[in-house]
Length: 129
Image (tube, rainbow, N blue to C red; front, top):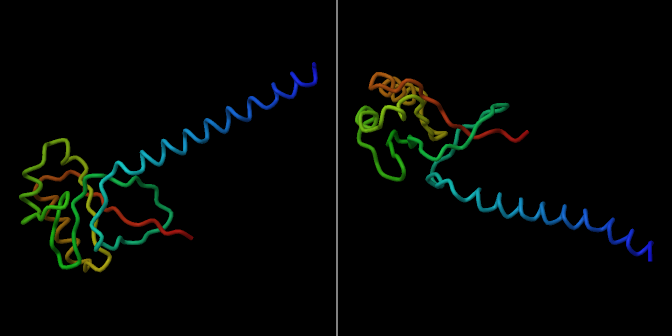
């Protein structure tokens, strides 16, 4: 009788641990789908050893220099900044296409800064090495 009670008490922590791991798995599966996806035609810039978080609201710069925000085309970088609330101008996240020429990226970045963006943060792909 004592042996049976001892065996049952030893199994309970394992089942509780399995339940917790399962609940965490379900939570992360659901939480991972909340951010809106980027345009499928965008290829992100590769970098290594940088920490970052995928932002939900970014200004996307396509390889031909076209701008989009939340899937809608943006006519001008300066007009985009003017339409943003003040707190969004503090740190503007930009996702450039990998094939975008560097000159064009710098030009757009300077336009954003001149229009009132305090910081322009480039979002890139993290290298898996």
